[in-house]
Amino acid sequence: MRDQSCMPVPADAAGAVIAEAEETVRLAAAREEARQRRRARNGQARRRRQEDLGRKAAGQRERRQAGEERLRAEAEEARRVLLERAAELREASGGSVPDCFAAVPDPRKRRGRRHSLPCILTLVVTAMLHGKTKLADITAWIAHAGQDILAAAGARAGGGGRRQAPCGKTVTRLLGLIGAQALADAAAGYLSAALPAEPAAFPVSGPVLQPSLACDGKEARGAVRADGTSLFLLSAASEGIVLAEREIAAKTSEIPEIGPMLLELNERVPLAGRVITADALHTQVKFADLVCGKLLARYVLTVKGNQPGLLAALEQLTWAGARRHVTEDEGHGRRERRAHLVMDAPGSIQALFPHVRQVARVIRTRTVTRWKGNGRTRTRVTETHTETVYLVTSLTGREAAPDHIAAYVRGHWSIENEVHLVRDVTLREDSSKVRAGSRPRALATLRNLTAGLIRQAGHSGIAATIRDAEYDKTLLLALLRLTSAL
Image (cartoon, rainbow, N blue to C red):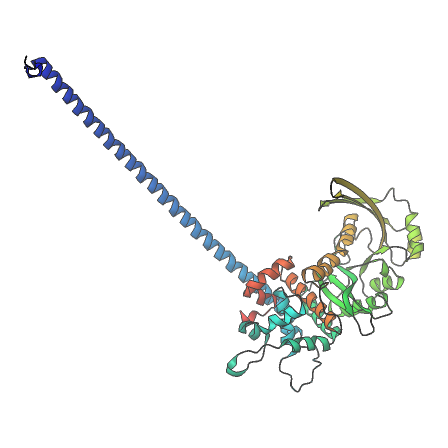
């Protein structure tokens, strides 16, 4: 039999095949058209995204450029303010830091003297502003100082005009020979000259906070004098700036030295109207007469066991009706509350101590929370300590309210936190290995000068400013008030 596939296809079947083929072609064309439309939409979306990214990138560039311009403008403004402040301080203090040392006698013989005393001491201060605290580090830094720093300090020029740095032995020998008190007077006078010239507003018509001056002594740890005794320095500071300094001689104390120190300071900076604070050691009749008499100032003094009669009389007073001011501080794991009770001094107190106008009782309550462990367990322990301190002041109730008395009491500790602590910790005086001769005191004076230069320039953070000055030449020269070198 013949194969049925060879049989002719009916007309309706051929039409069905053709229709199916046409439908397949139409569907394929539709799919292709849909594919083209998707590609077009995707292309448009991609172009929109690219345009958006381009606009965002352009906006980011504009913002970045605007930020950079703003930072440049702020930097230029900060530089302008810095230079203006340095120029004002230079004019007020009578010159730059090298000029500060011009009046200090040079103990070396003129023959063979290659480097001037102002140049050497300026380089020592510059090294301290670079964060060099040890004498060995200071001398090493000076030996490798750049030509611009040497030129600004006034170093001598050698062959070819190249500046020559003093060697370490020269620096060490000069610090050991220099007159320490003359250096201290020069540094204190230089800083004092830059203080505002406006006198204190005194007398006053109502309670107002007056400029204060804190007096306190400090032992230079490890320093030994020729007689084997420790070096002890008495300082007077205002806002963390040392304005006067004297060495306490052996077999004596601060009491006979504080009067001459304040009288010398009064010749440079009028102390009339200022409030002088000191610790209980100086709660003496002669000191009170000096402050209120010759100096025309006011005092706030602590009363302790060295004035037993006055202390007993203050303890027996009735404080129930006294004016009150309370402050509370919290931080570093401790909470401290201070209650200041202030009242006018009764006649019995005025008969025991001269010039007393008000008396105060300060109750300090300190709560400390710490963790105590034995190696296996830890226990949280809270301890509370209460201390009562009595004060006498020549400020009347019209001149100082209880909150002002509290400010003077807290301000007295600024000499500990802003002077002694800075020298001990930031400038590493306690870790210094310099022991003998005038070097320890000379370095202590130069540390005071370094901190004073930073504070008078308007910077409160000593360590942060030293870190910045190490890499910022403009800041460094501005702190040294060498505006001519900029």
